[in-house]
Structures are given as structure tokens and as C-alpha cells.
Image (cartoon, rainbow, N blue to C red; front, side, top):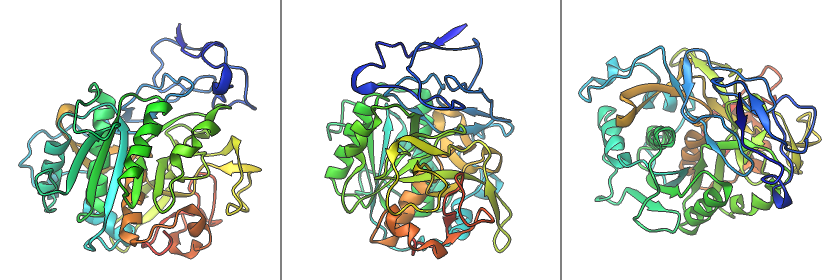
Length: 387
């Protein structure tokens, strides 16, 4: 048996109690136990494995610690050759995303910051291959389009490398590029996946005044989470957060200061798109965060943890490139939506945050027949007028 680390001592003080998926409420966090070798198990909940996919980060949850949200499609082998024509690459391409979400991709854009944990040593080189393959202009340190810093704001030393977060960073860089080719990209690498370090990295990103900050990570809710909300509250900056890749509510998607991004299954093509809720996307009602005044008729007495949504199903996923993972991949997870919507915020030129979106619901594709549900929120972007 494998014990998931979260003893009583670790959960004491401001860290408080943990809410596991599938529970009827918060409990005092003792040691959660899941069967050895069980992939993708959430402490206290029913584990699931994503069909035909693997999660980039192991779901060994701890209080005050996050996991990345990338899911790699394992039914489509990586394509190693960097000279493979774009038309021969599986997965959705930049033009597909721009078309589905009706985005003005050729506008000037602004700066989008990406916050993730650990280091991707080949981030800039891998990004160059993705952009060249799809005919996007170069985005490099040399031309001022790309900038990589640590959580102290310095260009090194960088944190230790981590395979799962390496894939996450590549995904996030590629998705910002796909949606807003003319945006500048700021990558801030946190020292670790603790919320102390990730929060410090968000604050560092905000100090450099991007239009939006994308966060592709999630952790189980716990009673001390409100202590961290200040890191996600930066006036004039849209902050997007993945809702998670398990069916439960998570943090920081539960924070009232972020736009929480749920997941969809996308199919079809130009003029004939269909989109439905991805069955594994994070969703639900927060246990601890109060309901914002702008979030009405959601079925929750506290904050519901999805505001808008975008493609996440790895079986209908996007093309990305990561040399360490084998080359061109098809991937999903709610990590796709966070950078997509962050880049869409940048394209809007005047990001308003979730309160504005709830008062401009007509500018989203209805994914749910009811127009709103806990899995997909208001729906997926239909242009940028709702952002």
C-alpha cells in the first residue's frame, strides 16, 4: 500500500483540513491510503485513469502543494522529426483554435505570463520548433518576445528540472503562441510546486505588468487556502487557472480572484464545431471560498470552480512540441484552457476578469444546453468581447 503524504502534523495550523474528491465534506487530514501502483488517485476519492492518456504529474496530493494538469494522449505516438509538415501532425493546430474560439489572432496582443513549477531547460528551443512548424513568427529572448525568469525575477539560476512540469511548460508556451502569435511571453518558473513558491511566482509575474497570467496547476482544497488568495488578486491583470483533471473542486480555481477554466471535448472543424463537457474536468462547489456577488444561479452556496472552458480532452487534443517527451505530441487536460483563455484576454486589450464575463454571457459558446453548468461554466470563448 502507498500512503499519500498528509499527516495530521502537516495539516495543522493555517494549513487546516483537506477535502478529498468524493467526500461529503472536509475532514481532518489523517494519512490517506491508495493502492500501490494506482495512477491518478485523488486522496480519499475514487481513482481513475484517463482512457488512452497519462497525466504528466503524479497525483500524490499534499496540502499546500500543486500538480500540473497536462494529459498526454498515449494512443498517438510522439513524432520526433522536426521537419514533419504541419498538415501531417495530429491534434488541433493554431488555426483550429483561432477558428473555434473566433479569436483575432493577428492583432498586436500584449504580454502573457506563464507561471509553472520547476525548470524546462529547453523551453525556448522547443517553442521555436512549434512556432516555425506552424508558420508563426519567431519569439525569442534575442528579439524581445520571450523572457524566462525564476521566481526572484532573475535569469538564473533556475529551479531543478522536472519531466512532468517540463511538458506542462511546453504546452503553455505553445498554446499562448497558437492563440496570440504576436503576444510577448513571460515564463516565470517557481522553485517548487508548493503554493508558497507558486504564489511568489505569480506575484513576480504581476510586478512586470502583463495583461494576463496563466496557471496550469491544481491541488485539493483545504481550510488554509484563503491565506493564498492575495497572490491571485492583482488589479488590471486577468489571472486564469486550470480547474483540474479530476472531478472535484480544486484550488486555486476556487479563488474568487481568478477565471477558473474547465474542460471540453472538441470535435468537428470550421463551420461545424461541436463541444461538450469533458467528463474528467475539475468542477464543483468550493468548500471554503465565499460565493462572489457576480456568480449567481450556479447551484452553489459558495464559489463554483469553473467560469469558462476550452478544449481539454486528450482524445480530441491539441498539437504541442516537447523534445524531452519525444517530439510532437497530442495533449489535453485543463492545462490547455488556462493559456488559451489567458491569451484571449490579452487579445481583448482590456482584460476585465470573471465578473465582466458573467455580465456578458452572450459572448460565449453554450456548451451546456442550459447555458451554464458546473463543468463548463459560461461556455467557451466566442471572440474576446466577453473577456
